[in-house]
Amino acid sequence: MLEDLRAGRCPWCRRGRVFRGALSMNAACPSCGTVFEKEPGYFVGAMYFSYFLAVPIYALLCLLFLRLLRHRSELLAFGIALLLFLPLGPLLFRASRLLWLYLDCFLQKKLR
Image 1 (cartoon, rainbow, N blue to C red):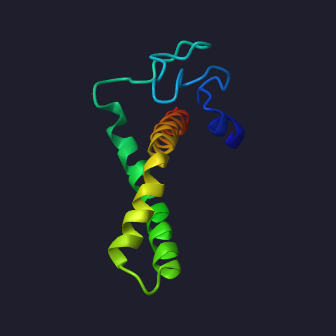
Image 2: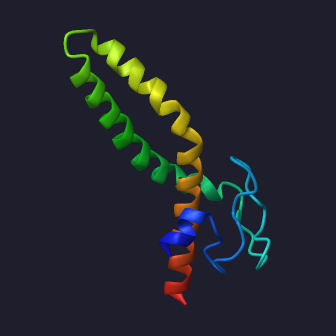
């Protein structure tokens, strides 16, 4: 399952790709036809995953640069950490949506 999650495969059939580009999702699985966005606002829950992934990463970057720039400005450390964190946005977007889809699939199978 972790390999399928890393590869961005459909949680239902584990063959089709969820994303067709860096940030664009397929409307449905190319392999099994499962519609990914089941209703408007479906991926709002993915923001929780995004938050819980982003905060520790940014906090670790801040701590690292606060330690490295010990005798300089704290604002400089936070700024450098932010500059290094921003390119991770697309990765966090993809990861949070995939985690949300896999959680939904798991819960649907569990409730059957």
